[in-house]
Length: 212
Ligand code: PRT
Ligand code: MG
Image (tube, rainbow, N blue to C red; front, side, top):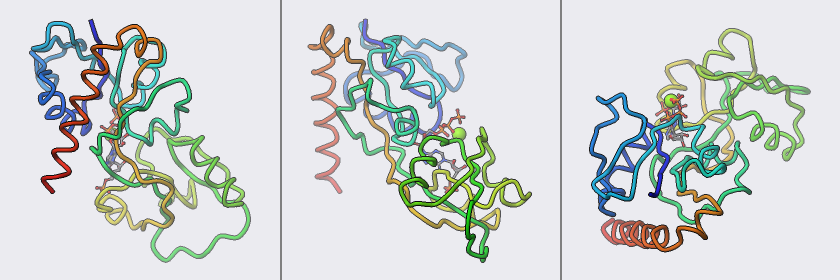
């Protein structure tokens, strides 16, 4: 049995067509079913439906052989323990800093609210800015509005969420897309089925590239 870890949100929506091209179609719909393990039309492949940030953990420990995770999540988790063989080019966005519109330049130590604590620490250290990082689990956009932080680090797609909260994107930290990750032991033990899937995904991605 091959287990693939996927999160329920936007990654799932984008991953479904890719999986389908490889003959993997879940038998239950996670949007209506409460099942966390989904059998698929491929008898030897199952999906586990978990939180986006938990995908690298499941794959690292071998609880899932493969997973699909945003590069933002992988940067934060630290991906040395995983293979990352394929950029799936789905769920694209940008990891950015953002501040209130027309905010004055901050000199000295800044306060940064984010759920990407390690990534933000690394980024501000790299550019030589002293930053105090405040960990939040959501609604980062609120932090500058209530005086909790000067700046946030979050992923941005259309920019509408920032705009609606009087913020503007500033520095680009990284371009983000979802990656296929593979457990290192599984890569050896289940090489045949995993390699076949990788080839299949790659073929679909190449075809897509040619179409645009
Ligand atoms: O929701 P949950 O707490 O379970 O986890 P999650 O928020 O990590 O999951 P999900 O499904 O929301 O995101 C999964 C992955 O999708 C992320 O790890 C990113 O790699 C990718 N992705 C792509 C995004 C976005 N685009 C995105 N726009 N993840 C989040 N957003 C959020 C962003 O945080 C902000 O609140 O959407 C808002 C900004 O969108 P715009 O269009 O207004 O700029
Ligand atoms: Mg979310």
